[in-house]
Image 1 (cartoon, rainbow, N blue to C red):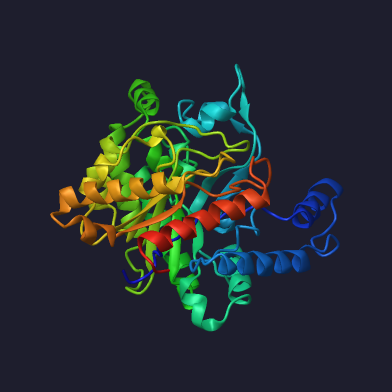
Image 2: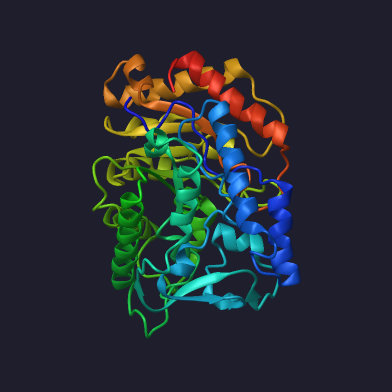
Length: 403
């Protein structure tokens, strides 16, 4: 296959070095500036080191390790014009059955902790403000020869991230938007502009991180939606709207820019997951209608179901099987993982009419999620991480014999 995707992939975030964590803590706790904490130099060195680690382990789609972020969604939405950050948002704003929200709420909680972003006025993209993704890309570029820039992978949060968690019409103020359709139209425009800016800077490989799409597989979420009388339309109408939002967001991407979407069921501090449910209920619609090149799918445990839904994967799409756990320290059995990859190819072939060997050409391997989607609190050590990544590379070499 013409990469990306590559046979061995990872999902973006990697374990952060202690000096980087210490610098960020000093900024938060002591109120010192980034310069006083030495953050720019520490960050630059950390990214150089993690790029070297990835290349030494044989990975082509290298990332910054998300070292520039404290959480996997980064600062992208904060940088859009028109957004408001709410530190203590009213709990009544949220869909209390949304898996992320369920993990945070406590009995009788009146406000939600953490950062919540909504649209307070019309959303717009401003290149003087939208700097974090560009900064991240340039740090990785500075650590690689220019011939490798096209393979750099930048992870980006789903366009629906600050919509799905909120109750009907609460992702924006009444002054900003009166309905989802107008809101989605502007979200797509700012994503188009962000992607165009990054393309101009040399980015050719973007992975959207989207736990929300996997939540459509959850019976609990679907039941919660059906019982919420404030909702307009069905839960599948919402899925249709999100697929359309994605397609609009990437509609102006040049042909040589690879796009993918990563589905997982949560990877919170301590390796906690938020939802369960196989892909069966969304697979046909998702694989057929969502116009990305590649689907990165969590498949490390039975929470994700079987490989049967892969029979709906169109012939022009790729799938990266996330069969290696970033939650458990134990190393997977190499032969068992290889057999799972072959089984996935069988189901793809059963739906596409290809031979198993032909279908295998559209498959790759990865861990199921990032190693550190938030700054700290994950069970694996750096040595564990290296062993997991080395296993991905070894299995990929033995199955495909190419990058």
